[in-house]
Figure (spheres, rainbow, N blue to C red):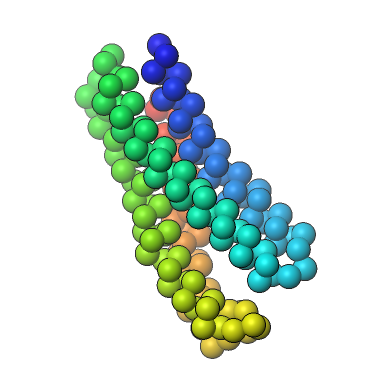
Amino acid sequence: MLLARVRLLVAVLWAGSLWAVGYLVAPTLFATLADRVLAGTIAGSMFHAVALLSLGCALASLVLLKFGTPDWTPQRRRTVLALIAAMALCTVVSHYGLQPMMAELKAAAGPGGVMESAGKSRFGMLHGISSIIYLIQSLLAGWFILKQ
């Protein structure tokens, strides 16, 4: 019973952090701060923290899946394992694949920011892909909670 509650708590922490930062904090930063470069920097720091938390929650979820689901059917275990793997993959691809490329474009842009540079269209494309991956991960997070 205790492990079931911890499992649910980890799932809600993971999903809640994704939803709060991606759909509340980041849009609020860009709507509130006049300096879009500063808003992007702060949002980037928040997304970095969420990525690390996501990987920690994935690891904790795997351990809890292994030791805290003796009454689950094999199909339910496979489904939850697939959800954990897919969500973790979203984090790895976005944070360790796309974000470094976006950071390079920002660094090369200079003081005017990436939106005033030649890399604007590439940055926009990478940002769009990253946003789609984040949306997919956010939807998977809802399913992950429901499967608990």
